[in-house]
Amino acid sequence: MNNNPLIPSMNSQEIPPSDIENLSKNQLKNLMNFPDQTLIKFKDEVSFNLVPPSPEISAPVIQAMQGLVQIIAHLRSPNGSWPSDLPQTPENLIPYVTEEVSELLAAYQTHPISASNIKSDSFPKKDSSIQTPVILFLNTLISQLLWNFAQTSYQFMRLLTGINAEILLPHQDWTPGKLRLVASLIIKTENFQSSIDLATSDSPPPLITSEAYLQSNDCSFCQNPLEVQSFVRQITHHFQDNFQGFNLLNHPIQAEFLSPKSQWEPIEMSIEIGFQFIPDSKTSEVSPFHYFLENAPVDEELFQNTPIQDVEYSILASIPHSALLKTHVRLTDPNIIQPYIQTQIKYYGLHGLQRKKQLQLTNSVNSFLTLDSQTEESELIELIQITDELVDIIYSPKSSSSLIRLQPEIPLIDLSLRLLWQIVKSSYNVMQLMSGIQAKVLQPGFLWQTGTLRLLMVLSAEFLSDSWELDIATSQPLKFDLKPIIPESIIQSDWSELCRSPQSLVVLKLQIINLLETLPELQSWMKGVKIDWGNSNEDLELSPNWQSGLAQLSLDFEWIPAQPGSLE
Image (cartoon, rainbow, N blue to C red):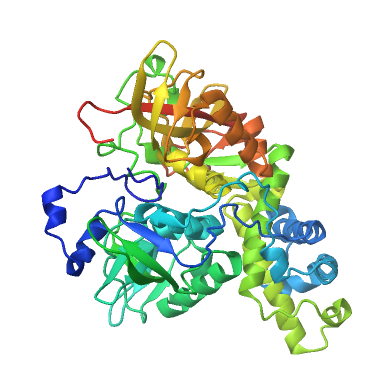
């Protein structure tokens, strides 16, 4: 079984002895189809960086940037008293935000964001005892490499699983569809070269030409049209800046390769990236867990046409699940607003500053404020542009109430995906459990069973007349046919460091809770926060009036027993 949340689940397969005997060293390439029986041995010490580096912007810089975000949000709101005849450009904003910009520049000068800050390992050492083995199965290596990509950035996770975008090819019109970042593991031996798409464990698809242009509102890298070759360069630099460890994208590595009935053979491994584009006029947002967790095609209709009084979710009866995901959540609880805003500043503010490395913010503050040169004014404008982008990310620019109240408003699908990314990046082991691992379970009163154990992260919300529960892994309403597991059960799995030895399910749950609660934003959601839920867009299929309620992120486990005769 492939325990990777970003790729389809795959049962392990046994190679018939007769087939193995017929294989020769010239046919090693065929064994790439059996990654669970192919070994990779590293000649040099490698680190997969199981504890992800947390990008660090100092507290004074975050506070100063938050002040600038709030003043720009206020100026853009109906209560901002902005002159109606004056465009809200960065140049025109300068006189209105001089004090806030000066505070940000002063904080930045005192606490600069250096490479050591960005790559510092300030994340709690929850996994510090876990050591990556020198010899790995190929499927484990693929899973680790994909996690390394996904955990560095929310944007990376979205790109690896596909975002809505448009493409402009030579001599053609703009075409909408789904854009996916393809990261391929390249394995070279003396006799052959093989490529594996990390997100599918299959051969990479055809990639679009480097001369094409891409644009997407779902990705900060290409909000404006961007040439593919420039896009690839940006991603390469971003990964290099944000990841310190086993980096095959920038540095090929020498290793050895062993398949059944063959000898160790030297190889060189590297990663190459490109883009796949699938034209589609009907684009939609999905979770990276959406497809592989479902054994059958998802019925778009969430519930049958049942009278309202007969169903639990009232207004949600008889609607497609996509309608629920298009509704909005407004953060009204100070306990979540501050962690949420600070999280966005840490990741998107940092990304913006990295993207604008030409900004020489370590110059004296006074030289910026005098604006005695065109260069200094240009740098100030770029800083305001970064903050203006943060306003769009944190608040809903189309919602006047969000800007007036300075309360972030988020589409439910975006909130689900953001929570998913924070959970996934917390630990490789958590990612494995969310995707489901092969395990043995002893439940009180039962015999040992084999099957699949899945970590279930659920965002639930209660309102006066409505309620809903969202499975974070699939970004869909929680299924009614989930198979719970008795809390006092004992778990054992060779697939996870957390339960390689028999482990109490209660202890396993506490370990995960302790890990997730080290992240301030997740901690707030897990304690429960006040929210408003609704939608101001009356054109949508589901446009409920705004309601106040309580939302909470909780975790549990789902147990799926193996079917008789299935391969485990």
